Length: 149
Image (cartoon, rainbow, N blue to C red; front, side, top):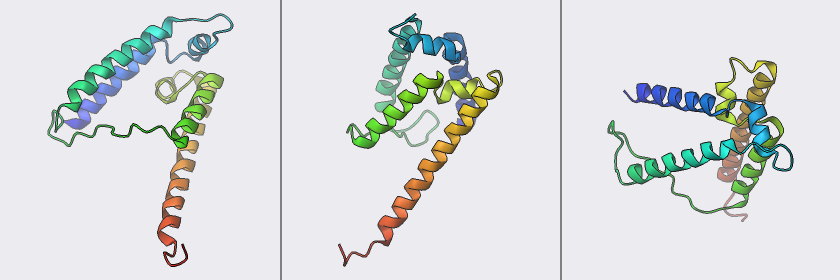
């Protein structure tokens, strides 16, 4: 049942991205062009998403288990550190250059042509580089000799 719920949630999310225009990079770039022909319509999409998320986090945070009985994993970190800021900057620069973020890019794979495919390939490569670098860092930290520190 959780797989069906995830599938339905994904369909709903993707449909929302398409209906709101978030899967159209030209619309997103027009939203980000505050010095030019700014299109503020995505502000309403973001406000709606924040409201829905706030309600979901309020309800979900009060529950120990999910609706289907699984463990409820709520984000707990509230600390802003250099890694978070760097990640946000890289995300923002990529969004501003191309007009895609991960969800809309995946939603647009079927109709976006080569630019979308190239973006998704680069996104996956970036995720792989991050994963490998994290594993290397974890491996190095376990290999340190405690007597030399």
